[in-house]
Image (tube, rainbow, N blue to C red; front, side):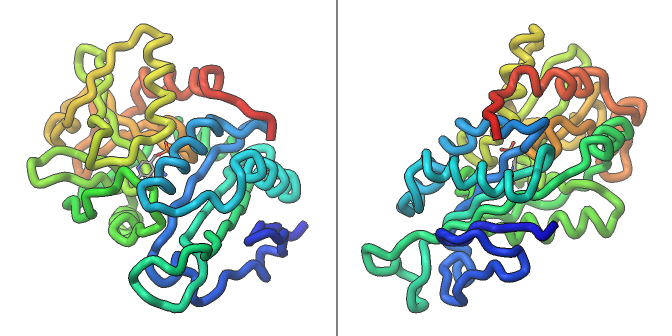
Length: 287
Ligand code: PMP
């Protein structure tokens, strides 16, 4: 069955789905995106993802390409046409197509919208979580508006590639003060010896992950304490647990940071229980 993508009003075979060479996303990374998990036939935390999309668009003065309800219809249709019960739905909005000029294009230029969906294997994901993953650390080198979910991801791409080359799953950015900001495509957490969840505040310096927000809900429900503060790489080495969160990995235990194992080098019990409880707490919209 061929994969189908939505591009500016049309459902196309994936291999024929293209955007114009003067799309501002292609030329300037002048666009934003969202990724929602699809699990057991539901879109997970869709309201929060679309609220964040709205914020990203507003911060960059890009208009909505469709009404929100029409966008939801497109997301559902792409999921349906690709028969995705478990996987992800990806949406990308750019400032549209216009003759190349750094300044904004003329008023009335229509934003571009691409929506794709992809299957994933929940059994493989569960197996990965059972083993936990390794992360490496890299120097933070991104701009200071990483709170906006833009498609300008080159530092993240380079960091992730370094991780791959070192046999690791993720790279954690470390700021000039020695504190972890976040992963290349995940938020970073530790659990202290006292069982307190620690993650960096989301005012600036990181993307406010939707999974991060929902894990707060899960933790509150389970009576776990949370501290929003920075933590150093050294603190993470000696933490009781470490883990990462994102829509595609949910809660993924971290068992090693650079050459140091975290605790006994096994996935932590709190990370495992947060992962297990996540789906029950998250919002589930029928796909
Ligand atoms: N930080 C970065 C840099 C990311 O790219 C992502 C995933 N898009 C996240 C954090 C996690 O966000 P979410 O939980 O919304 O997937």
